[in-house]
Length: 181
Image (cartoon, rainbow, N blue to C red):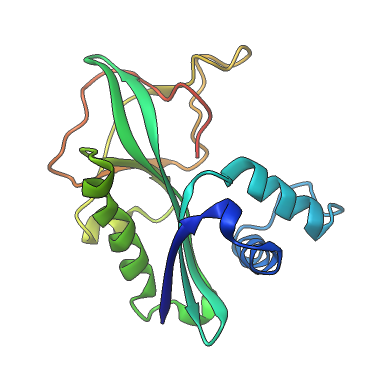
């Protein structure tokens, strides 16, 4: 399997279409059925352009994808820089092969590169991350920068986790200072 570390904006149009198509097959967009693939690719690149990307290819096919970037959050102990992990996806043909574990551990290994203490992320599959050394956190999360919903959780998945589980997150409310990812 070929592995690439790059910025999302460096994907190139053809590969970005492949990535977005894979992501949409895993997480079908809600209420966006009429949007063209070009629109979806442009939105992906606009939202994630400067974020770091790990991409696995098998025989030229996008097999796995993960996005990571430094993010400042506000905690009861003050501001803290963490590694945001987002968009972790494995093509259905490559599930149950260890590919998901490999790409996530590659992302987590970047903590030292960034000089950050932990990764913070949401997930619908907490058992997967528990096996890798992550732990679920029970903090309340908000986004004070959202003028309409400052008190509403910015996450859409039920579980919020950190890695490594030994890192610890300060107790109390965590302000993501932006939307969920």
